[in-house]
Image (cartoon, rainbow, N blue to C red; front, side, top):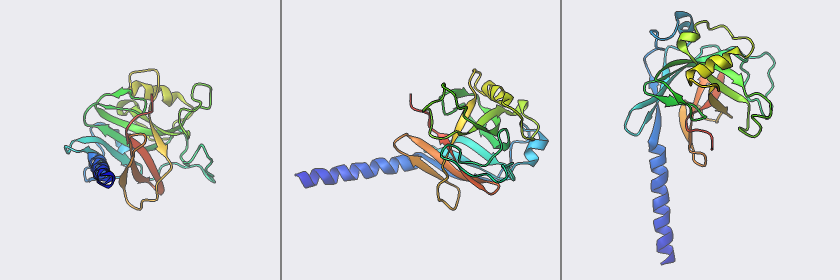
Length: 215
């Protein structure tokens, strides 16, 4: 009886893992960045093809186009808290929510197109222990971010908050890149996150495209 129960449990577990793996998938987009939403200058900095994450029903959850050559810091050396070489405020890509979406904090984001700018989580008492690293992408409304040049300072944090119609920037955290050689999607089961593995220029990056921070 014990062996039988163990076998049934194993079958159920495999079934659950299969369902999780099938819940989302990543597909290549042949269409270029949405030129009707983004400025011509921004579009010129982006790859002509992108990727979309679709759910089990085949509906597109989010679409992403990355920068051809994002601006990186010369001589960058990663640390335990900062893994990525992008300059703060630099354009890393663009993102489109075909339907209403949300950011990592669970803030609702209206359907539409947003630029993706690299930023680092501030080192202050308000963010202690909220995430393992400081690497984030901030969503900015496409209509408010038309110049692809690197944005100085931190004013773009406030512009990002406009994307969520709140006082906090709309954020997507970056994880340590996986060893995958091709664009892919991985399920981080313990946190119920799905991270897309992509490449911006020559820099591989993993960004959480589905899921939010623990309450």
